[in-house]
Amino acid sequence: MSQKRKHEIACPLCGQEQLVELWDSINVDSDPELREALLSNRINRVECAGCRKSFRVDKPLIYRDRDQDVFIHFDPLVGGRTLPDAEKAFREAMDELNRLLPPDVPSPEAHLVVEWSELVERIFLLEEGLDARLVEHVKYMMFQQNPDKIPADKKNLLFDAQDSTDDQLCFVVQDVATRKLEAVLNFSRADYEALVNVFDSDDQLALLDEQFPGPYLSGRRRFLQDLAER
Ligand SMILES: [Zn+2]
Picture 1 (cartoon, rainbow, N blue to C red):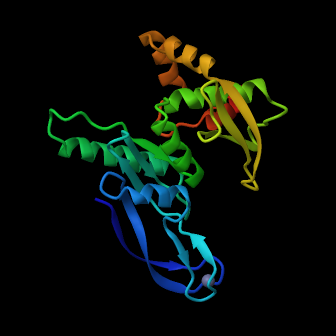
Picture 2 (picture 1 turned 180 degrees about the horizontal axis):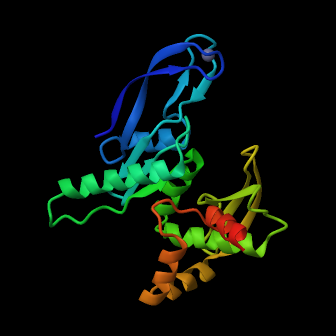
C-alpha cells in the first residue's frame, strides 16, 4: 500500500509555511499509476499557496515494485543529513524488516539512493534486470578511462535506459554543479555481459564486495575516494 500524509513545509522560494500532502511510500503493485507519476517528476511536487511556483520536496521515500523486484529507499541528504546517517538508518530499517519477516521468507534486495536522479536511474536499471553494483563498477571504469572528458569531481554518470539498445548501455554525463545533462557515452552490452561472467565466481565477487561494501553504491564516489588516497 502506498502512503502519504500531511507535512509542514516552508516554500524554498518565498518562505511561506504550509501544510502539504506528500508521499512517504509508493507501492506500484497496488498503485501502478504512481510509477509513471514518479518518472515524470510529479511525486512530492507541490505548488506553493503563496507564490504559486512549483517545486519538489526532497524527503525520504520508499519505492516498492514486487512484480519487478524493485525496492528502493530514497533518503536525500538535506538539512545536514550525511551519507553515514543515511546508511545507518537504512541498515536499521533492513534489520527491522528482516526481524518482522517470517523465517521462510527471503529478505528483499533493497537499495539506498540519496539523489532523485539516482532514484529514477535505479528504477530503470533494476527493471532492465541489470546489476546495480556492476553498473557502478562500469561507471568507475569509465571515469578511469576518460579523465579529461569526464573529470569525476565535476561530472556524474547516469544510466539511461531509454536510449540504451540491445548492443549498447547508454550513460548520460551530468554536470554536478548545474545538474545539466551534457553528453552521452556508450558501453558495449557484450562487455557488460562479460563482466557478469567474470563476477560470477566467489573470489571475483569478493573484489566487488570490497570495492562497494554498500549499502550506498556509487562508482563516482568510489573513484574519487581512490583518487584521494593515491
Ligand atoms: Zn512560495
